[in-house]
Length: 88
Figure 1 (spheres, rainbow, N blue to C red):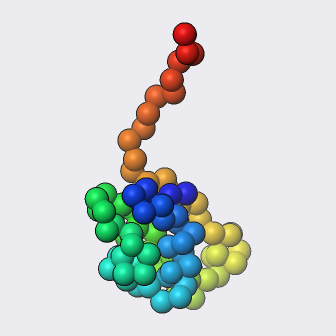
Figure 2 (cartoon, rainbow, N blue to C red):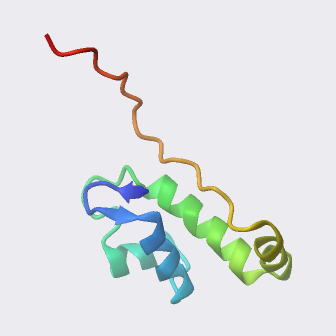
Figure 3 (cartoon, one colour):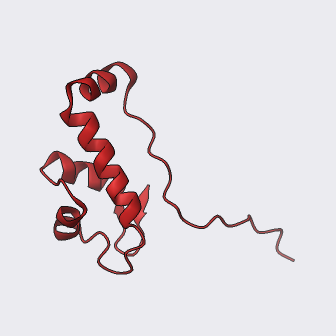
């Protein structure tokens, strides 16, 4: 899922960055360019970092991931658009 639409950064890229040492939004900004354009993805990127750090660095989080699988990450707070009707 795209987290930063401006830079085309996905949640998987953020997860890989966290696994390789990113611990803050500013680490992500330096490594991936997240939030370097409009900044509207900052809250979602920070939430993903916090979730990944908790799950992968705490003993309880590691046990939960092994037993239950990774949690679903909520979709970013992008505006909801109603589906278009038939083209006439």
